[in-house]
Structures are given as structure tokens and as C-alpha cells.
Length: 427
Figure: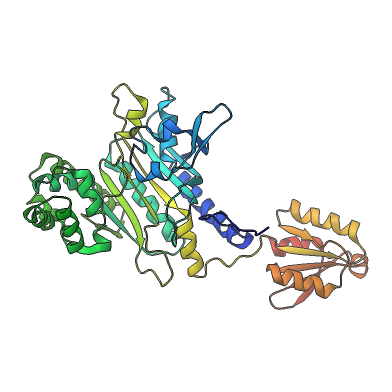
């Protein structure tokens, strides 16, 4: 049998998984520091939930890329392609839920889409969302928390921020009515440039005058102050006011890594206000050029799930663990190969050594014990291969003195120590 992985998935080796767990733990700590509560939803959802209006919606890339299956009752199911749809379903199913509801969730999602660096078909998302608040304070909190996470890992980012209401207003002023179609082209501005977007828009039936009017606004250096003198659309003014409020909060929080990106739209159809994406400031060769997270405000989605014409405001962001891990590997931050602190090697003292290992573990020190009977040099070789920093030799001579020989595997030095002193040193 030719052993191969399915396309777009991968094994996560122990050394990488250790660091991945640390990344997940650091996200969890920051989420909880900002008052978000954990939630767990199922990987499998009813297909109609995934396809519901306000979720993927018919014709979206997410729905086209959904892995579909049926159960033994011939019910149509699908693997979740994101965590937000499940969150909306959860909120809609609990009318007694106290709002605002601040939750986080970490878990795998699945998309049967194209594969490239930083993009896989099974990947982890780590989401935070605030449901039930229309205040820009919620958006500012999400941006601040995003900055705090990347700071923790020593990654310099730029947070690109826009507002869909502002962008919609700009399109309205340019005379462009088919907003959804135009946004598909505008969202490619970084990739294909002004000429490429203009040609694509003209190919979609828009006039040269309309595209010229559009690019009067879509200038990289444009400021909110300039936009304030140009925007006449009611919706555009609403978006501008929201950005002004948000940027004021970010300045108060001393967040200095954000910038206005007037072309940022994000692909999902359900964004209604703020949108944001963090990028590496200076990506190195071989690192993903895609955003490392993405999110924004989606005030219509949850209410559509709940029904009854309810408007339930929501804002959130999703972190892509796979591209983040690719960056950490590229920058040499994936260096830990084991969680074991000390490797206990018994020399004809297995029963006593087991007791020593348990005492070390009871003291909170990650410990392993040599299995079988080999020469000490082989156990040193094994410990070095795994990156275990210490080896504790438990032989008859050591036991007579009620001590163990602790070897530092980094510099080769050895100390004859009582177990309590070993514990003190390793802790």
C-alpha cells in the first residue's frame, strides 16, 4: 500500500505540536484576559445550517468548498467551514442568552478549496466574537487583543482596517450599483493593481468614468479627514463616523500599528461595518503573504438565524493557526522538541527509580523513565535526540548515598544530589 496523506491535510509532528499548543494556550489566555468565555460547537452541522442565508449563502465560495456527507438516516450534513456559522446557530437556539455574549472557540474547520502556502483543507481557527453590542468599543477591544497576541510572539504586524458602509457609500457615489460584483474586483487591488481592477470592472460593464470616480477614493494615502470632505452618501457618512470613533479608541489604547485600507472588503458576504486584517510588516522569503487573521462586524447574520426580523449586532475575528505556525517555523521559533524536563535512568534499580519518577511528577516536573536495559551512553544519546535537558542516573552507588546523579545534557556537567535538591533545581 502506498501510504499518502489526503490532499490539503498534514500531520503535526510532536515538536511542532508542542509549539502549536503554546500558541493556542497564549491565545486562550489573552481571550480570557479580555473577558471572553469558551464555547465548543460540533464539527458536523446540518447542511441547511451551513447554507443558511446569513451564513455561507448560495453561490459563495465557502458553500462550494463545503465537505458534504449524509448520515444513515439520509440526512444531508457538512463539515463546518468556519466557527462563526455555528456560533450564530448556537445564539439563535438560545433565546435566554444574556447579551452581550463574548465567546471564544478554538478548533478545526474544513474547506475543499485550492492549496497553497498557508492554505490547507483542514486547518484550525481561533475565534473571538462579541454578540449583541453595536458599540465601536467592541471592535476596538478586538483590535487591541489582536495586537497583544502578536506582540507576545514578537511579530510586527500592520492592522489594515476599513468599513463596509464607507466602501458601499463610495461605490454609490461612483454610480456603481452592483456592489457585490464590484467588491470582488476591488478586493484584488493589492494583487492586480489599479489597472487590473479597472479593466475587470470595465469588463463587468462599468464605464471608464465610474472607475475613475471610484479611484478618486481608493488612494493608498487617503485619510479620514480627506474622506470627510468627499463623502456625501448617507451610508458612507455612517461608515466614516464609525471609523473615526474606532480610531479614537485605538489611539486611546495606544495602538499604533493600524492603517486605513480603503479597498479592504473581505470576501464574506455578511460583513456590514468594520473589517480588519493583520499582516506581517516585513514577511521573509517563504513566509505566507496572506493575512494571519481576519474579521469585522456582521450585524445581520445572527438575527437572520434567529428569525423574526431581529437585528443582533456582532463583531469578531478569526486567527489562522496554520499561517501563523508557518511564520513561527520560518523564524526559528519552533525549537522545543519535548516537554520532558528530566529523563530518569535506572541501573538495576527499576522499582526504586519508579518511586523517584513519581515524586518528580508529584512536584510538577515533567519526567520520563528509561524503558528496557541499555548502556548509559545509549540513554544519553536518546535524551539528546529528544532535547531532554537533564538525565537523572539512579544506580546502586547513588542509592547508598540516598542521592541521584543529575547530568546537565547541555554542558555535560554532573552533580550528585538528594532528590529534594533535584526538585528544587529543576523547578
